[in-house]
Image (cartoon, rainbow, N blue to C red; front, side, top):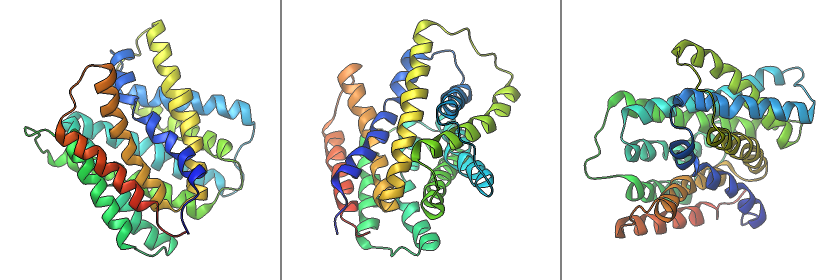
Length: 282
């Protein structure tokens, strides 16, 4: 049975919007440390959602929301920024694109999902497409950076699979509020320990933070967790390839960056990998 097209399209909105993160951060949030941006992206959005939904976790969901907030928000973003600092952007993006492949094997272990050749091939093709999109011939490797990238990819992969396994008894919006709040609170000590002051925000800063928090976190994570509840994890994770694709296309269309033949091939491979992965059976 093929994946529901409307659920697939709705879920795909999230990684497409996440692809704007680099553009918004570099153009609107200069002067902010990456970990500060991560905290300001998650915590205010989570608190706003909590005020809207007015529902706290109960019982075991206090622990589960904290675990998922750590995996999907705190650890993922923390490792993402370590990788970004120690690796060229293309290498970091390629390492992080291993997440769909990790999801395939975690789903088999935790959800007893069959490991289908189409899922593995789709994930590998997608990684190849991302590599063509973002890697440069001068890209250098750093062991700590690569390890951090793999840890970040594994963290969000595990968080996505556990969210599917545990099936929260609330709406995706409430589920998102719990995780963003927990993840943001866990990031707060890291911001304080860095000792870097938060700049007085300008209008541009406020607009950038509003986009990353309200649209790039509150809305997108709600769509993402809705998709996790309705689609196979391997299908949902394959949509993450849309993030680097969107980032490249935004750089080309808005910042005047060039688009090479290899990048065009990479675009085709990314689209092909998503098509192949979404043909899995539920």
